[in-house]
Image 1 (cartoon, rainbow, N blue to C red):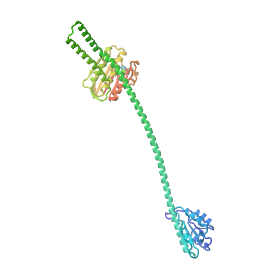
Image 2: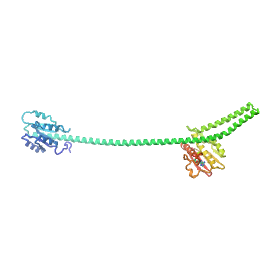
Image 3: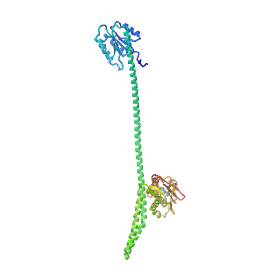
Image 4: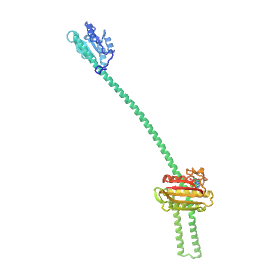
Length: 427
Ligand SMILES: Nc1ncnc2c1ncn2[C@@H]1O[C@H](COP(=O)(O)OP(=O)(O)O)[C@@H](O)[C@H]1O
Ligand SMILES: [Mg+2]
């Protein structure tokens, strides 16, 4: 298709003719034929309107037709033309002076040409040619409009598709987001649950340690209570003998005060020991081990267990002092328990403190026979215990491991020696 030609159907270059009263109709048709123009001669205005509907290049009508009933159907057709169309209408005028009908013809919604009678062949050819050329240009415009419409439709389609894709994608994303939210909420809940459980364990371990300490306090107080008792007896006896001097009383009272101060000091020590740590401090490992040892010393003495401490002096840790002490306490108490439980003849616990590769190392080796193979892998699990319900909770080693490994970035391990178990804390 050439751009300036336009595309059109077989009927669309026809000249539709309605010349019922024209004696020259025959010769006019012959002129058209000579021009190579397809024409369609109609007998009635109904036929004319029907033919126009099937496709038209130009109309050729005589003036007289416009004064008949044709007006209505033609006007309707012309008014219905699409925007690109302005149908060429050639009106052959009657002889004589200009009429009102001829003037009104110019008002038709089309490209109207008025042709005077008698018609010269040349004039007719020129008018028909110009009419069809104008029609062809209209077809070009029609093509362009069509192309525009098509590309608009394609654009709209692309936009619609894009909309759908965007919608799909948005839905997908929001689903993913929702899932993520649900998952992270669940994860948070699990983490929270875990934290709660850990806190509970910590609490239970503290309770166990407190029980341990009550026992220790009662051991530690036995001696000073004895001393206080003796002082009172002495005071009483001297009074009865009448040998009390103010100096005598003063010495005894000040001794009793000393003892009481020492006792209250013991309680403070224990209370501090049980306080959870908030800040990291620099502490000497030997100090902590000795203090902790002194707290359970009583129960070791009770079963005649011997504790040997081989310690380097300048071994330091920066961390949570009380938590570290509790880990140590758990290991000490376990050793005492196993001595008792297995009724070990000469219970011996050897503690060493040293440094290796810049890290502090403390080992606790007992001679109670060690840990059975089937138990070894589980002793650090929470609630794992081989002891009777009233003797063990199974929390001690689990907590110790948490404290050393998670809170202090160290390691807590165990192995069997020839004589017993050896626990090792590295921080
Ligand atoms: N020194 C040790 N020798 C042999 N077994 C031990 C020793 N220390 C711990 N165990 C074993 O590890 C288990 C877990 O210890 P722990 O977590 O402190 O809980 P509990 O002392 O309440 O049983 C003990 O029940 C015991 O079987
Ligand atoms: Mg224990």
